[in-house]
Image 1 (cartoon, rainbow, N blue to C red):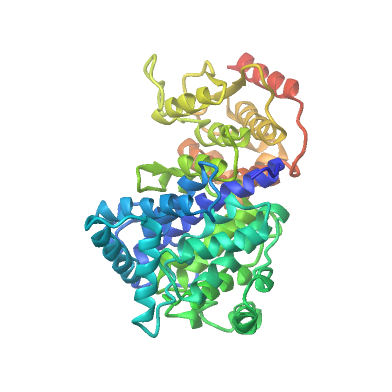
Image 2 (tube, rainbow, N blue to C red):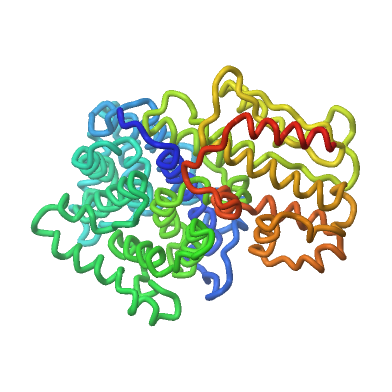
Length: 504
């Protein structure tokens, strides 16, 4: 893919895999169990059908990763060679004994493995034949197992909607031969493509890419899911789309959760979090519906809208975590190197380690060490601030400038640290003068439900640290009044850092 993306588009593309994994991990504990009640947030507590660890993703993201790894090689996903590689990734995951796998996918992969072990060649061909045989033997085989993993296909073909539609259907047919399964993947991939490039939700945009004889049915199904009055009339918007193991109702449930969730007037990117919680509340196949919704929500709001606590928590096959998904998404869309905004994300995610007492000389939080290693791979160096009670990670460019997005993130955090310094002197002492902090810092704290008077009386430095760690990059942008693409001169950021060091 040769499409050159802006910084904002890069962020949105990076959000596709990350937000899908977050939705998956949020839904795991409630799969075919009692979902959170209205007003109750989902939590990445693990468990579920596969006894997953907290934050661990399930088959939805694992199979998406298998696709993304092939896309990351620059392969055209419509080619036989790419389909063979994807099928091989599916079998690699299957051979490892996944804790949870769909009945249809398991049947197809099992039959494929038997034929390959007997000496047949042509991996994708065999898998497609087994998928077709499964469908031919059953009246209902349009499960949601292809739709749940389709998001990374969009990243490989952002520049060509027709090629994307073809790729989406071919990858779906590896395990799901029913045309409705392929249709759902075409629709969702086109919606993701538009969200990444144009920052808007348009779930019906791909209708013209479907065969004429099924287009009207899909239009009616989408109109039902987009009916806000009907959605809001339900106890949980979208609950009528249970059960949602069917690819159509899974897509409808994801759509209903997204479009019925109000976009906050302030910090609008928090819509991602709110909509994912609503997707889980629908119930039934919770991890899959939330993973499907997450792919589109991440494409619209970006990796910067995923809470840091979720980024740190998500992990899974084949030994990846949230940061790895961001890098994988970068390569899946054709970036030879990791984008600079990801460096800024590492800065923001690992910037502060609050401590109740001075840290032993020479020791650093493990996250900071990992940040340093990753930053070094991107041509940046990590410089800890000379403070005893916190670690400031400053990513210093080695011979290259940071982009606007990275600069504003570093500027925002430096501003916040300076405000904290002015307010209380030392982080381990009470915040007696916190009310003197700049208005934007006060607004930020209030946005998270804090009381400045109580906060100052308690001197709750740990609570403030948690507030910062829950902050998303999009929240920071809104709190500091910085619009997307705003330019912050690097020398101004450097001067801010020097002021902070002088105060230390």
